[in-house]
Image (cartoon, rainbow, N blue to C red; front, side, top):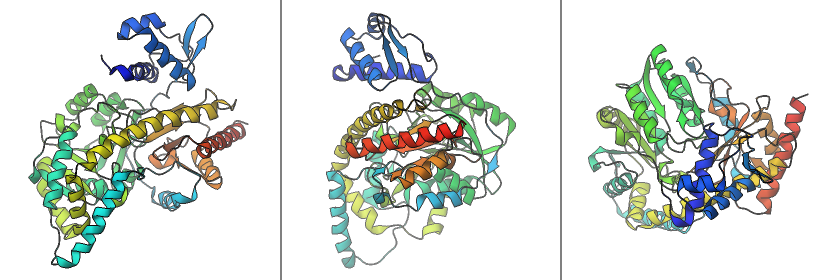
Length: 478
């Protein structure tokens, strides 16, 4: 194992936190000595010391006088067995929660929109403005699939950088990844069919299943390594699954990433079953990203869905799908659903992507989100650990990509009650009940740190949130 010289202590941090999340180190366990870990990982003692100091600063480990370091943060909760397939009923609560505008909150941590306060976004909208002025000089027409030629060619390059080799004639441009997934489900299933999903599951995915009359078979996940393959294997033996829909890279909401070995195992376990791969966060890896399921697929059964919503701006509504052997069915539905696409947005974004600013932008936002993840984790941990009823009673996922993380509280916590109290205090977050069909995650909360700033406003917001949660836990424990 290697790491860049300037970032080696991050590598040691990741090694320790991963071992903690996997259960190799339990609360109270003594960690390897500085000398032992230095030799084991082939790094300097100073690198190990820096890593231990960083982990101690965010209360994941603690030092004991003359005894080294021990684990002090709870390991993540063990996954539960899969429930029976069930229909989804989330539309009412989703509409209630999503109607609130973000700008009214002093701590906007609820939305999964990217931070758009970067120079490239201003350049993008300047390009859109120029193209809007050109439209009157262009004959009116529909932009038929696969989409704008320049944009399609640029998406080939984006796919290649994500490790997905493709040609222009394999790409179909859609209104965001949501439409790509919807068209894929329509091509593969009929009302009443069972679709296997990771759990917790992005609420947009569950709403799609609800709208199409499909049953969700939720397979529990580990917040570090993703879907539980043992439970998946059991479920496939018990139920007839028509499609599998997964978000394996920087999962929404947990931030989990399936290791490459688990991806190979997944494909072996699911032979013959179509897989829809949602990879909208795949471009936001802080360092090395895993191979996509699409790259590993040898049967042409992985339908790859992506968009620019998380890397540029969700308002663009530009996504794409690589449908493999299902391309004809999906393209036919795309044409009949739309009778054409967004000419203006496709042409403008296509031109923007030719400038090279997108790659520069990706490098900037990856660095920004990585710093945000570290600082948000430190601020939240500091605020929570100052409340006696909270310290040692929570687990916060620490993703290595994207801008989302997942907080797990004691089982008696009610995330929706906490959400309502936080909302009244000007704090935006998403309650865990939006991410399942049967209330398994009512004690959880999803945060976005895309727009996090390590300033007084956010620090005060997290301190207030900690007090709200602590008071709630004390009340519900009576």
